[in-house]
Length: 230
Image (cartoon, rainbow, N blue to C red; front, side, top):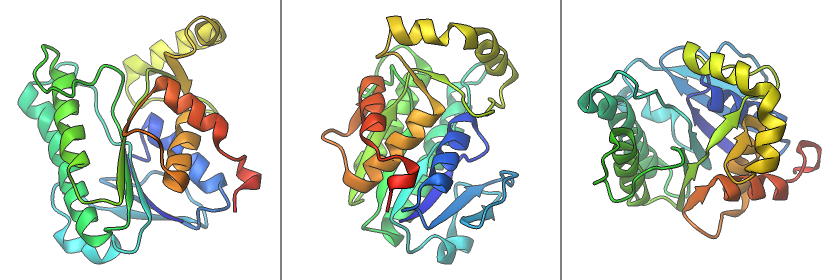
């Protein structure tokens, strides 16, 4: 399986990249972003591209892939709806349109979040924009498209959020994660579980298009261990 990954330097993207590099059935990962992820691996190729709303100049590098894991995202805190929409909707839709045309047999997985508003009419700005983005991607002619909606995500294996506030929150909450996991198993997950689940969906699909936290954790459990993939 050949994979394109957006957002490899973010917290979720780091987790997905780690699982891709561990999985023996993933032969190649193309990381696309404005800056290098900082990681090196025999399977990993990096495409540094400054304008993530226009892929005309790099289309030749984006063909021949089986799956795309779109983990690129920003916090909406302090952003206007117009600015948030530009870095959320515009980038994802531009990537989706290009990849659907170049790779019609591709499975496209988009990471949004719990509470995303599929009606696009709710009061919460980020949820409306994420919902609009999901709907646009689901309408594209991919082999299949799935929307991942994780809740609270525990970073694992030394992974950290690039957002200082989130990083501080995760550091404080880390000792409490076993409690959260026990009391609210359907609201919490980990970077490892998200990575394993997104790979499992690329391999075998899923029974529904919108995958909530419970579904992500279940798919992670169903995924083979990295040593068992082939």
